[in-house]
Length: 324
Image 1 (spheres, helix red, strand yellow):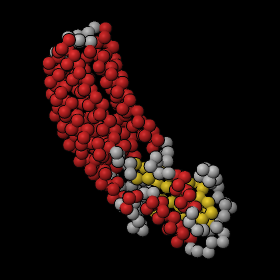
Image 2 (tube, rainbow, N blue to C red; image 1 turned 60 degrees about the horizontal axis):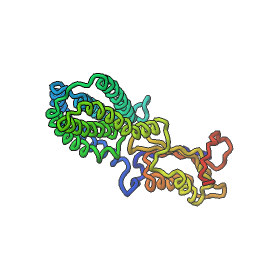
Image 3 (cartoon, rainbow, N blue to C red; image 1 turned 45 degrees about the vertical axis):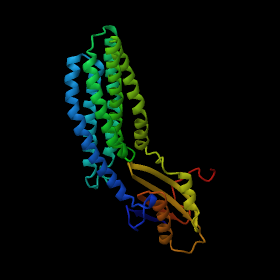
Image 4 (tube, one colour; image 1 turned 60 degrees about the vertical axis):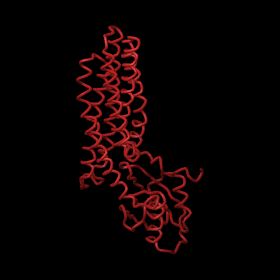
């Protein structure tokens, strides 16, 4: 007898990992992320205008690169806010998981925009190496120092939410890259004032571009892992399978899949082969297995198929946890 059962966010009142309800933290993280993104956006847009003006007056590529990056920061944060807004739209018959993945797509877009920004910096730096312009070091130093302060504050605001959301992490990476750019601007201003090294401006611009590529690489890897429906990194799949198979009456767990819908919201499907000699209720056994996945591993969306034989089961995707 096969039984397809579905577990929503909290059908049985089970707690999420760490004793917290799984659905509630996901919502709380999203709301906290939205508030922090709004504060960071106000800071960055305010200073971006100042930096653009000073960059044009001083003739500094490093400062203009930093100003351009602040513009992309504002766009990245705006996109992240839009993704949060649209992800709260209800699910429909055509989109049964709703719009949660828009947050992941926003993170991907932000990562790609960082690479485009780095390419622009490299292009401009190449031309500056061929024809090194005069740079007003004093203006660069003052503007860069103020920009560094703004970026430190913005990064501090976004840091906590970045750990819980790929979407916020994408915006956070933009701010971190801009913070690195501000450091480069400050150093460029100091070297120009102290030694007249105008060449420091394009050199530091290239360094900024390299750091942007490095800082965004982990975000790109994480986004593609989610889009390829890889198993969530925080879930030990071997331990999950063994925990389910340790329950009396369970012979084998197979065709098991775990993936991330959006940050803080994971799904699990599994076929559970029940011992033919098991005389208990399959529904009771299913609820016990669901509790393990939901309470001990913090998985919010659970679907389990109970089987008492492999006859008629066309899914033969076996996890290698038995060998492990």
